[in-house]
Every structure is written in structure tokens, then in C-alpha cells.
Image (cartoon, rainbow, N blue to C red):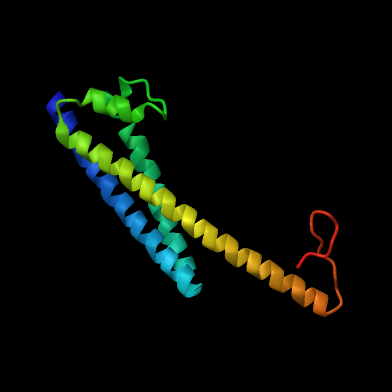
Length: 151
């Protein structure tokens, strides 16, 4: 395969990866809304969509790392951005797509972290409610880290 054709394929794959990451972000936003609004029944559906997109993103990442241009590089997680930029310095479309992918990844990371905090808050609330019910029933069996009853 010629170098120009490799670049076209690389650009195409980056665009697919970008679109998939955007779809993943939309799922994370829907998940956030469902959590905030207490629509827990939607979470299972969104979780399966999210899992499917994560699998696809992993496949796209693996495929991207198979490109001859990328194989010639020593890919280390911390240096990938610099290396892709240097390798394709004359190809602004690749640089633009790569930068967009990095920004989308940051957004996805923040949304996923935020959703995790919401879920953690729900879990803490449920644990406290469970403990209170046990105490009210006279079944004090849950304790804090220092041995005290935990509510």
C-alpha cells in the first residue's frame, strides 16, 4: 500500500474513532441525566450500550496501532501524541483529528468520573439507609472503621 493510501486509511480510521468516542460521550451524558433524575431503570440499557462502545473503541485503538506509520514509532502512552504529531507534521487533517480525539477523551474521562461520583453518593445513601433499618430493627451489625455503630 502506498504512503498516500495509508494516510487516507489512517484519516478514515481516526474519523471512525472520533465518531465512536462522540457516541460514547452522548451515552455518558444520558447516563448522567438518568442518575440525576433518578431513572435507574435506564441505567441497564445505557450500560450495555456503553460496554459495546468501549469494546469498539478498544478495537479501533488496537487497529490504529497496527498502521505502518504508527508501527515505525516507539509507542509509549505518554509519547503517543507527540509522535503522531511529528510523524504527520505535514498532514494537518491527521493533526486536527488527533487533537480532537484527545479532547474528546478528556471529556469522556470527566463525565465518567462525574457519573462515578453520583453512583458513589447513591451507594453511600443506600448503605446508610440499610444501616438505619438494621438499627431500627434492633440488628446492629454494621460498624465503622473504629468499631462504632455505623449509620
